[in-house]
Length: 318
Image 1: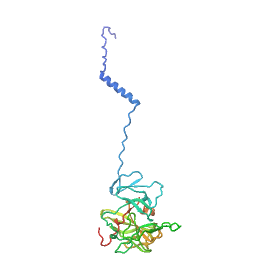
Image 2 (image 1 turned 60 degrees about the vertical axis):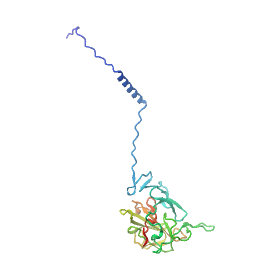
Image 3 (image 1 turned 180 degrees about the vertical axis):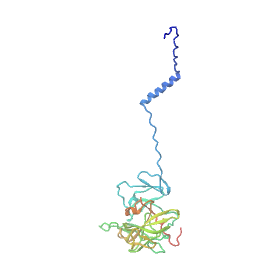
Image 4 (image 1 turned 30 degrees about the vertical axis):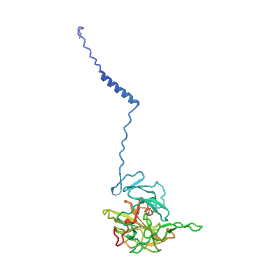
């Protein structure tokens, strides 16, 4: 087909030049993009969720650090793996802040003391020993109490291991209620089982053997007046016995007045006495699944002022 040269050429497409504002914005974007190649934007900070609050006994919040376990409002430290426990078990390693009072517990030999947890006397409980019943002594009067110290060595000789002596005469009040008390006794004197204040059912023997001399430990289920919907378990440790009572073996059940054992001086030669100690069993602790000698470890039981659990003497009142 022939095209005439007289036909007019098609008009050229118009060229659109960007405005100065557009050119400036494009240049700025290019500069920012090139600058980011050598200086990358730092990543956003990692979001760390807050630590969950550990829940202790009765739902009380306790924030505990590594190698500690919550117990109510307190955090109980755990010993390092393989660490040998000092005398008195893990109780000598713990000193948590919280509702419990930390104090020095006179050891069996008096002069050796250690800091550890201790549940103090509740304010509504009588302060005087005269208000309470004890495993030995007359029914109408409290026994005498001893201040016990290491026995002095004789001239040119060392004292026998564990030997102790009473400082002064027996007194009407214990020198201290922290960590247990020492009750004056005669060799072979009958030591009777107690029914603790608010106790339900019979006491159960959970340990018989060498602990602080010959020791019998009994477990008691107690419904406390301040919290009637809750049952707590307590241990009573009867130590330095001459021997256990007849039929007193682990698993035996004892009524109030049954013979726990007979007073002696085992584990502390030179002084006949009864060492009596109360300990609250931690929630979840299963005594029969443990080495029996661990019943005094801080992770298992906590020392408790005896006045919180001893039965009131007839005629005494809160």
